[in-house]
Length: 390
Ligand code: B12
Ligand code: SF4
Image 1 (cartoon, rainbow, N blue to C red):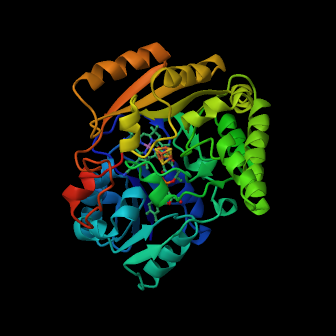
Image 2: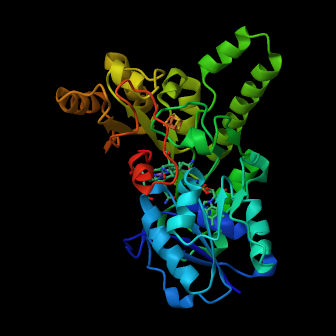
Image 3: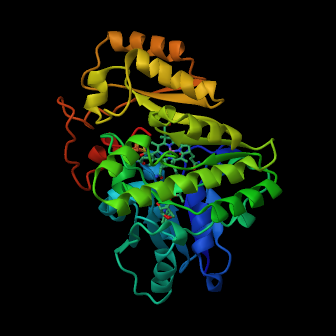
């Protein structure tokens, strides 16, 4: 019996930009007794279906963008007599869909790190269940990626996660629903160990695959200080301290290391944090600007972002501290008008963002008043329309 892990993609390029981390985390979570998992990342090469035999176990991880290809693979693997298990963001949000369209025997929702071993045991014992709730495990239980299985010279960037979850609740984003709003932050030892291993394997570019690298803001601290809850304040302070510890340790790495992360604009309020990022070789960050107008930000529940001149100033602050900004903007918000295209592009130029990405909000993700609509379960068309924009 072979355990296969497949990252689906309709297009294969031979080389990949960033390592799909889940493949190597699940490989790390595969108990030794099941041998070495066979990994296929279809962004590199298409899965050869003839390698899948009766009784094999095929784990497929999907986000909304590659779910359809995942379902093709799942259906074919089931036809070949294998056990088919789906997991990942999209399967977490729409578990029924993977069973109906993807031939899934089982779907794992949430984190796979701990539950994966049990799923494999159940397959072998022929006692597989349709649904396994992996939950949101604590950060000290995150399984480190098994980088020894990486194919050589295949990826430009590696990916290491330092924190999972985001305290915000932007309307278009799946993160707070799947990973939760309580940041689960790994200790710096675990993160540094992976980074050092990746450096030894030749990587100099590492994406910090985090939802939000700045999980505790100065405002959070001020608000907690006003509340009569010393425990909450201490917990926030500890999270912030641990961030600084991590950054201080990243700063000790050789100067040719380059990190990239994702962060909220709020970090621009915090020069001490930005300076620490700079010393830590964090050379760039995706900042979710989303909209340049106050109405647009209200549409997506992102009132903590700035707009107008203050927005320009905040984005420039990152750059002044040596952190390049990949500004992410959304078009198609309920309050957008034809002039929004011009206004947005002009602001991106004025703010001097190094790279800008403009993504479209699927038509039904927010109602006209910007309220979230309930997402119908198990209708693929609805599921795809309500996919997050990243
Ligand atoms: C790093 C990252 C990127 C990187 C790297 C991608 C890569 N090659 O890995 C970059 C910047 C390239 C990127 C690009 C995009 N991304 Co992105 N990205 C992320 C991020 C922040 C972390 C992903 C990660 O590595 N996590 C760490 C691993 C270990 O966690 P995991 O994948 O969730 O896996 C765990 C569980 O889900 C489960 N699991 C996963 N698979 C399986 C399979 C089985 C069988 C089992 C049992 C369990 C299981 O177990 C794992 C361990 O616990 C996530 C946010 C997030 N919270 O996931 C967004 C996220 C995945 N991205 C998202 C989006 C939308 C995109 C883009 C489409 C953005 C855009 N507009 O271009 C592109 C698509 C690129 C592509 N074609 O894949 C969305 C997806 C939403 C959705 N509904 O699917 C997310 C969730 C962010 C969001 N705002 O909601 N992304
Ligand atoms: S868009 Fe960014 S800030 Fe908003 S919930 Fe998602 S990860 Fe958090």
